[in-house]
Length: 179
Length: 179
DNA sequence: ATCGTTGCAAATCATTTGCACCCGA
DNA sequence: TCGGGTGCAAATGATTTGCAACGAT
Image (tube, rainbow over all chains, first blue to last red; front, side):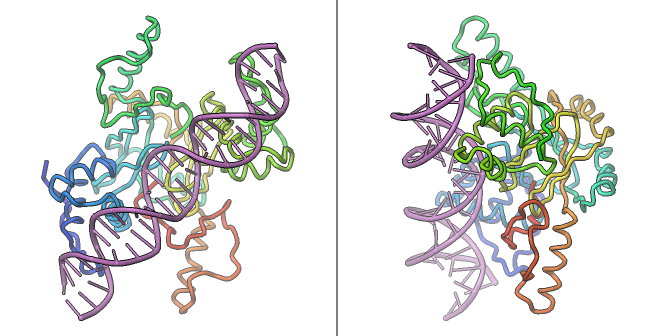
């Protein structure tokens, strides 16, 4: 779980200090492909620096984001998720659990120019985000509906974490119309 | 400012009641093309129903969103913005002030199928959101940089609301890396 | 009359911040 | 040493919710 990629950060040149916490957080974000949340990063970080605080994790993530080293995905009422992948790519985000998955879709990137022309916006290289139901949540949803049809309570007994940390609230399932 | 479009909501058929507040909020969202926030909707709503509360506005917006009558754009630390346009379309969002603008980009919609194939996600018809700097914020940014270069304080004296309610915090300007 | 709705205020929750102590350069 | 960093706890700010009064059907 430890194959850091972008470790050559010139902390010093920006008047910043290289600390154990910063190196660790950066390493954790970059060695994951499941777009961790601040909370899950904290959990993993504490295995190596037990005393590290959530505030430091958030401060570091913001710093890295501002330096352009990582991306942040926020919105939809879920905690933000972070992406340490540096190359230009796209994403799909599950509307039910908030999970984010990378995809490569060069065709999509070409459209930025078109958009810029039509809108007067200086369109940036931010990745495009598609929305949908991930396979796990779709299965879970079918399960819930089956249970309901059978007069069940709507929550299956032993179905665990389809995606990375699903939303527990069944009523928030498939919040149509938001992103 | 009052050319409601989608007023034929079958409140009753869903066990919901038709109230003055709901009609008003729906009408306000649908008659705007600038993607208002809950707060700005409240402000306008109070001109007709002085006693209407923010809670009711939020409750109504959520309801409408869940019924698929409007879209919600959240994230990036800004209050959500709502879109009453019903047809399938795309958006550009300003990373500096949060303003959202509609665009029509049929080519983009065709990609949903490709994405679904590659990711196992059941990709939904949610509009795609591009990110960039809107013309007003780009001008504002240039202005700020000019002022800084001249030893100014970084905030020009009389520049007002470039977009719809810009973020006042200069330091949050151009938060590279988030959406 | 019933039961969904509203207003108000209090509660949430992710994220940020003030501050005193700590540590990297 | 010295100013940036960290942990902790308290503060923010958008959005939600509990509850009693209200009003649509």
